[in-house]
Structures are given as structure tokens and as C-alpha cells.
Image (cartoon, rainbow, N blue to C red; front, side, top):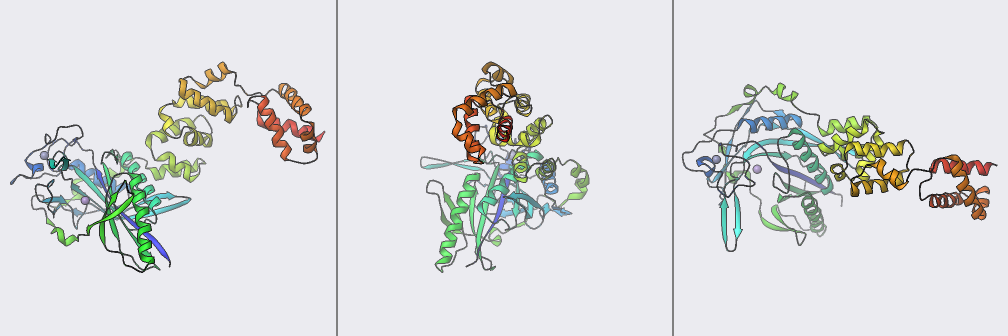
Length: 464
Ligand code: ZN
Ligand code: MN
């Protein structure tokens, strides 16, 4: 059987506006006491009238521009009806058939491949409140009710759980570049529902949906499990049931929750308290476009132009702070050296510990052959531990590379005298002996010999 995994994502991004989506209540509910940031509008009291948050709409349009969406001429809000204790109105104000943004796409680097994932739409809606379960009671906190949520819906074009994770990471970084959301998954600023199906021989499969994914790890694990489960079901000739499935983190399994609701179940209708919105009359969309910062994809291309591999460029641009660090360092040292050390030695997080100036000083010691790359790794570890600069450590510990030809010659003579057999072998063309001798020399100099020079001198000796 020719089985192909097909994944689509629906992502909710909490916008960091000052006030909520349809009222003036404070939108920063994280540290507030329950039910203190509420008013008649977000409590859903009868007769209270919503007023749309201009900033939230502007940011949604801005996101649309970042993803090359088509910005709607007219847009409107709709009521999406369902019952839940954290939704006092009995409906959520969302958007149905006229979202602010249509189409659009996001480019990701998956392995060595650049891939474009198309979007269906981006719309704006309000969040519900929160239920807190204690002992045998459930409490309702409505601080979060009415928080602006931007919902991004992709086409089902993601082809593996790993790719889904890369996509969501890229999306998170764009939200941060645009400065419209903290996009922190742990804090619920970024939440995701994933639908997954298996196509058989080009024939569309039946999707299941995993809801409320709140970490990258969960996204990948839940999809890997569901992909395997569906393939196993199909291989036995059974059918997949269209349903919503939950994720049990401790068991590492998805489980059946309920059959999937259809759009008609929500009885959508236009929100009568908010008039339709002429987007291009309210915002100068072309001017907004000028506000867009350099986004990760463009930055990645620029870094590739500087000589970096696509994969390395992709890692460096994910975080604004890391890319700023890279740019500072690469002004003073070789770009590839800078990228390599940030990714593999600082392991990205290290940029918070070592100042760019100190990192430049360390890498310059490698570039001017004062220390070898190997010693530099030890120096870096000591820099992290002691907070001292690279020069201080190299001076105080006498780590300077032995590059003086006279000194090196002397050491090489000693090693050759001690190891006549390998030296003979080397002369007779046995190249393994070279590694052995270089190893002995490095040991003698505690790794401080300049390997290039050692090789050069040894080669000269053989020619004699
Ligand atoms: Zn309110
Ligand atoms: Mn939604």
C-alpha cells in the first residue's frame, strides 16, 4: 500500500493587545486574581455591547501581510454557538465566511528541502474563560474571556509530525518578529489543533483531530502516535472513524473523545452588534506592509547569501536574539566559524551567558592561530564557569598554541626518536602512522601544537 501522511493545523495565537477583544478590560490576565478583569461585556451580561479592538484587527492584517494572504475587502464577525460553563454568552464571537485574511503561506526548511505550506485563512475571535477543577468542584475564571485570539488554518499540506513541529516553530518565531504575541506555548499564548489522515494510493483519507496541543513535544508525539495508529488500522482493512481524539501524556497515546462536530452544529450567524468591516477603508494596507520587519525567511536567505548552509541559517533565525548575536559576531569573525560556534558550542542558550564581545575575542584567538579549536572549547567552558575573558584564561593557563617552528621541530624530533617504527612506516607510505605521530605530538604539547604546522613539518621530514 502506498500510504501518505497528511496533516493540517489550526493555530490559535493570543495577541498581546492592552485590552481585550470586545471590551476595555485588561488583557494581561496572567497574574491577576480570578474574575477581577471582567466587565458586563466579557461576562456576557444581557444587553452589553461589544466594541471591536482596532489594534487586534490591525495586527491580524499585519500577520496576513507577513504570510502573503489576500486581505479581505469586507470582513465581519459571526456568532459561533455552543454551550460550556466557561462561555457565559452561549456563543463565541468569531468569524465564519468573511475572515480578515484569505490564503497565504509559510515557507519552512524541512531537512534539506524548502517547502511551502499554504493557508486557508486567518480570522480573529475571542477566547473563552477557564475552568479550574478543585476536589469535586469546578470553578470558573472569566479573566481570559474575551482575550483576542488570531486563528490560522493551514491546508492539509504538512507531510510528517516532524514537519508539523518545524512549521509551528517557524510560525512562533514570526509572531515574535511581528511583536504581536509572546507565542509562548507553555503559557497558552500559542495553542494548536492538528488533523491527520492517511492517503492511500492518492485517495483522500479520513481525518482525526487532536485538540489543545500545548507544546511542541506533544504536537510531535501525538502525531507520531496517531500516524502509526491509523496505518495499523488501515493495514488490517478496518476503517478510520472521523472523530476528535485527546492526548494522554503519561500513556503517550491518543484516545477517542467524541465524533467531530460540523460547522452547521454551531448555528453560525452574523454578529448583529458589530457592523461589517471595510478593511481597506479603515487601514492603509500598503502602509502597514511597510511596517513589516525582515522576517525569518528573508533573513535565512540573507544568511545563505553570506555563505551559511540552509539548515544552519534556519536555526539561527528562529530566535531574534540569537540572530542579532550572530550578526554582531559575524561582523568581526568568519561567518561560518561564528555560526558553528553559536549552534554547536554555545548550543544557542549560551548567547545569554557569553557577551558577543567575549565571543568575538575567543573566536579571534582561533582565527589568528593563538589557540586551536580544541583548546578553544575548553576555554569556552572556563569562560562560562568563571566569567573571565578568553585572553585572561589563555594567558593565565599558558594555553597558547605552540606554533614556533624551532620549538615544534624540537618536539617532533623527540617523538620521532621515541617512535622509530611508526616513522619508518610513514616513510614507506603507511598513512595510518601519520595519525599516530600527530597524536603523540599533540599529547606532548597538551593539545597546544598547531596541527597544520605539525603536518607540514612531518611531510618535509618524509621527503628528506
Ligand atoms: Zn470586559
Ligand atoms: Mn477558534
